[in-house]
Image (cartoon, rainbow, N blue to C red; front, side):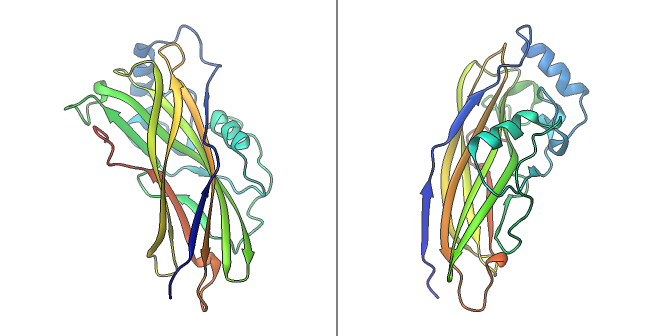
Length: 229
């Protein structure tokens, strides 16, 4: 059966942090990397050891998806995250999750991929949310995600843009549509963490005999980025 698919976009937000200490330096960030043992599931302020490996992102399921709530949740990290409204109030709605291994992306200096001392910057998707609306066989999922971009020891101050892939799978785990976008944040040596969020929608038809809950929406960084590891 032919799938009817429509994707609509909402403006991507980019926010920089203002709570970092002015005396923060690249050297201190590198020291934090070496000492920290946390993963993405328990984020802390600063880069953390997640620069060397990732785990699944923390997911929230609010009744309403907004860029500001997602930004607030991303900024809270592993600390006291703000309570987003809802819970999974729509259990039949397609899940929205990060694709395994693609919740983070590390970019290195050319020719030095994998060298922790050559990291330019790193992107992390740390929060996700979704809600959906059903009209007959047609399902519209409004999904959002947020995260942070971290300046590495070889990084430069300025705006950083990273590519994101989003795709939908059906009950047979076959992709029925995909979308590409970019997230942006500004970082600096004295302010090395920037935050981003995005909210978008995707609409698709559910064939007879299938249920909306059998479909899934995935998000992840595009690993075809030059010098990414």
